[in-house]
Image 1 (cartoon, helix red, strand yellow):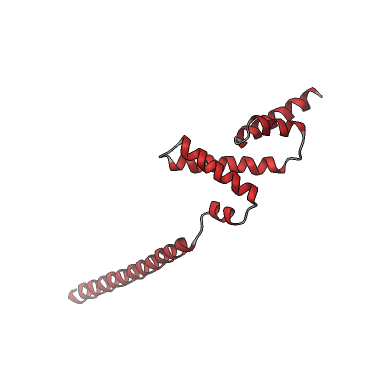
Image 2 (cartoon, rainbow, N blue to C red):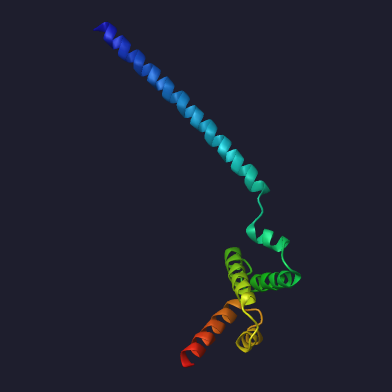
Length: 133
């Protein structure tokens, strides 16, 4: 009976050692993955910055104006600034895909730096035109 207790306690001791070393390996893996995240995030560029690096001068001027307006409208609310700028850039890109026509020109005249309103108004006008034709 004494030998059985000794064997069981030895087996449990070895099991705990195995678990301890196993968890140490997991910690090493986690640390290395965190370190790799730090390295990769340090070298990563924000998508908007990438876009700014490879865009045409017209769009770059629009981005500057949008940033100025966002800072003026929400001086200390950076997440709102970022959200609004990205929303406006998305709408700007959409409006750039539309062929020039009287409805588009009217939207651009009425809301020169409000691309989300241009897009909304343009789509509403086109839908209404299609319904009555």
